[in-house]
Length: 129
Image 1 (cartoon, one colour):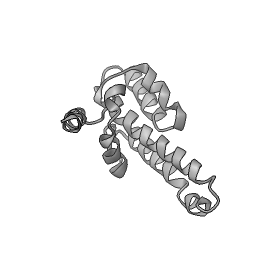
Image 2 (cartoon, one colour):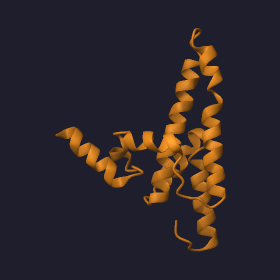
Image 3 (cartoon, rainbow, N blue to C red):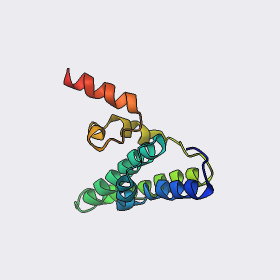
Image 4 (cartoon, rainbow, N blue to C red):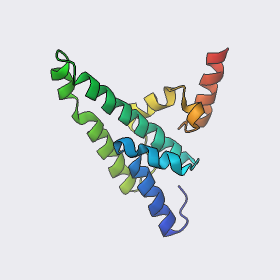
């Protein structure tokens, strides 16, 4: 993220934080900024949101509710870690497992938010062959 004006950096930081706050992930997506900073945080934020939804669904199934309850804190912990890293200046932080999952999704091409631009394009080409 380039250091332009102080207001622009703060605005980008707010959008980066919104990526990790559940459904508020959609606001930075609609802002339609296509730099590496936004692609990274949008992709990681979507993985965290999907994890929250999966845990919410599993929490409704009687036999699995107990196990899902033990992992309910994980999305919040991941979001808190990413937000703290953003606020401390590490703006291109890759959350360890979340980043790997986010680069393996195939629908990034449609959203145009692949965090590893070349990696997603190569995977899509290999899948079509």
